[in-house]
Image (tube, rainbow, N blue to C red; front, side, top):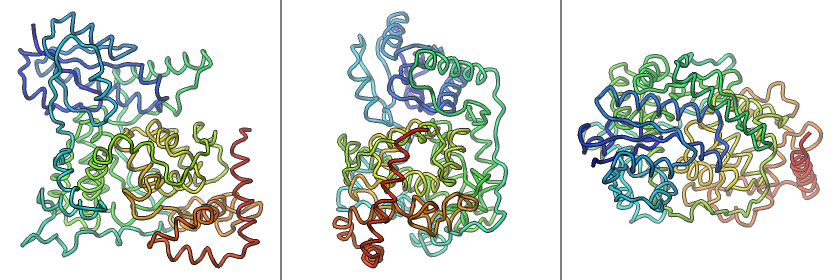
Length: 512
């Protein structure tokens, strides 16, 4: 009889608490690569390759450290798990708390013959209990207050007497520059697939072919070229390359969107943080150390640390704090089905949308402003079903999980929670996209027109959204200025805007 450790696919850390609590001679380790995940969601091929290849590499690394590791390819988690327990005489099963509520519920419902031993997650800096203790006194949970508390708690970018370096907590106003002509970032670090990754690519392509042959919904995205890191050493190399070539320039243009430049100065670390290959505090400490040594502009250094210490921890904490009914919220009563071109990752006719979708198709990635101000912005003003759209984000992005996407998409992007997370809807017209991107140049639509054959759909949808929800939006103090602008639009023009929005939405619902 021996103990068993089941390591989930997003817990690929050698500091996993179950590994730390037992010695290799006392336990066997199990990783399960189950195709049952495709029954619930058709994941992007690059995401499947990333997770399964990282799992296989992690299993090999644990074996080199002396662990007895069983790697099981299965059709379901439950059958593989119980078979393994029986075969190896497992007396108790050790697990780390999953990052997502549904997976823990599913595990607890399994009819297993051994007791479960749960270990508190080490994947985040704030435990659920610590976050709850912070959140309890507040009526509104704003990220800025949480971020400041995190800076103090972990002693990050702090000066004397508990004051932030540079005399202010947030340099976001310095990091919103529009892209000048010819803006280009450094080449990101990528890795050629080794034999293990190539085998996973072949499996994913085989699964896709089987789905297509059966007439079922195909897997989205392209599996090649695949350039993501799949080991901890590779993920650390990405971190060091970011520091050496991208950190100093991260700040000013982090909101910019440039055709042919899908990553600019973005760190590309989120997939590895979310898989467990990197730990958030080690990344924060390394960024702080290197940034101060290099005299990195504080706006850039603080900006990237805020993404990890602030936003990542904040959204995970909110995921658990908001409760199990949060994913079903739909503040605006949006119910429009997702357009066909979203699943096809292209074909909308809008240059901004099709550029982002093409990048997503090839890599499973888009940076945060592309996600918020192109993809989610469209979903908000077009009235797309928030549950369907949030699920789409989960499936399509290599760093997508329930805890990530519910707060980021349903809350921040779609305002479906009615303001529990964001203080106002992040709705924008084509003017914002034209200012912050190069996408509008050469587009068939004119970002300065609201209606007509060349009127930008973002414009018609934006003003129609404000008009449809005017009564609700007027009660939001941060929407006062734009609602006054809406009141200045003549009635006949609003009718034309409504007609243009309906024409666009009607066309998108008819594929081909």
